[in-house]
Image (cartoon, rainbow, N blue to C red):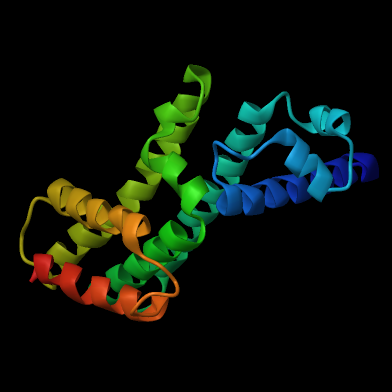
Length: 194
C-alpha cells in the first residue's frame, strides 16, 4: 500500500472510531457529520472526502463493529475448553458488545431501519455469519454430548433474543456490575441446553 493510501486509510479508521464513540454517546439519530468533523478537528467538507454522507459513515461504523464482533466471537469459540466454556465466553462477548457498543450493535438487530437497501445484503450476510458461530457452538456441543439434543436454530434465537434485550434495561450504575450480569446470563442461558 502506498504511503498516501495508508495515511488515508488510517485517517478513515480514526474518523470511524470517533463516529462510533459519538454514536454510542448521543445515539444514531442524533449523531451528525458536524459533530464528527468537530471531534476530528476537521471541516465538514473534509469529512465528505472520506464518506459520501452520514448514511455511508454509519454503514462503515457498523461494518467495523460487526467485523470486530465476529472476530471476537470466533476467538471465544476457538479458544481451548469445553463447549459450555466456549458458549459462556460467547455470551460474555455478546453482552459486552450489546452494552458497551449499544448504538452500533442496535443496527445489527434491525439493519433495515438504519441502512439503504443496497447496503443490506452485506449486513445480513455478516449478521448471519455471527449467528452461525452460535449455531456451531450449540451443534458441536450436542455432538460432543455436552448439551441435550435440541433445535439449534431455536436455541440460538432464544440466546440472542435474551441477550439483545439487556441493552434496554441494564445500567452500569445499577444493582450489579457488567461482569456479574455476564455471569448470570451465562448461568441461566446454559440451562436451556442441559
